[in-house]
Length: 313
Image (cartoon, rainbow, N blue to C red; front, side, top):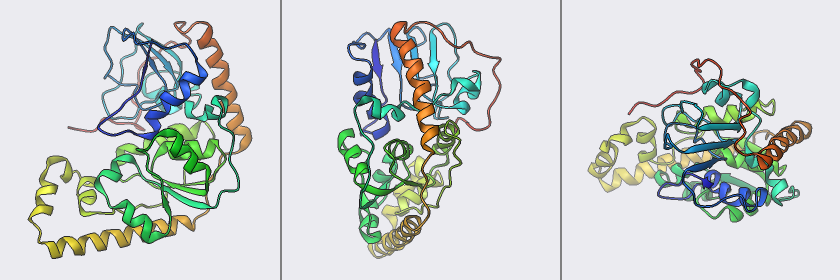
């Protein structure tokens, strides 16, 4: 069985957690056989996978990035990330038990406490388009790069007294390790619904705080102009003085937004809710160990779920 995890041109913390957590939770479970795929952490329950491969699902979610998966006998659902994923795929909402990254303590990471740093984790795509190193310096917060190796990212989160995060798995890992966090509303709307999918399993209501674009390119991309290539052309056509002015303008506004977020009241799920989620996932994990190919949940009649949508283009 092949442990699947998405990887683009650069690493992304949430997706890379698969390679860290699952070999510890399921030692000796995986090989390189592509005819059986294990789908754990990430918004990967969609139509990207080979139809003939057997897909074993343990906590993955639907993110609206690609068309929905059409569940058939080649999909074995042990659990999914949250009730919104379940409804989007035509499953009973009770199938949404939680994100597997919440099992970090079961994989050997103890809870944190006593950190002194205000950390800031942007979405990995934002780092490629924005000026977040500069903004973090202006705002006086520590940038935590989700493209770094997962153990280094976890160690940095553990040193925080509060984490400001645009990245969902920044919040999930911080919450699991009992580090208070502040949710920064993702600059691209398509990244927002999955936050609620996870939070629903804990009875949380996400209190998003505004995050301003840190560069002109990032602003253009947020309005979809950057997707066409015209955004970079417009920036290239601007004179150096205008580009410098734009950099200062966007960086200063983004730094103000970070400072405001750092002054906000952080969130943390109730310990009892977290422990209950972990227990439900561990119970299902034990069943998966005994018989990974045993189907637990039959699809219901498919219905549309407005919490997720497939972006055009």
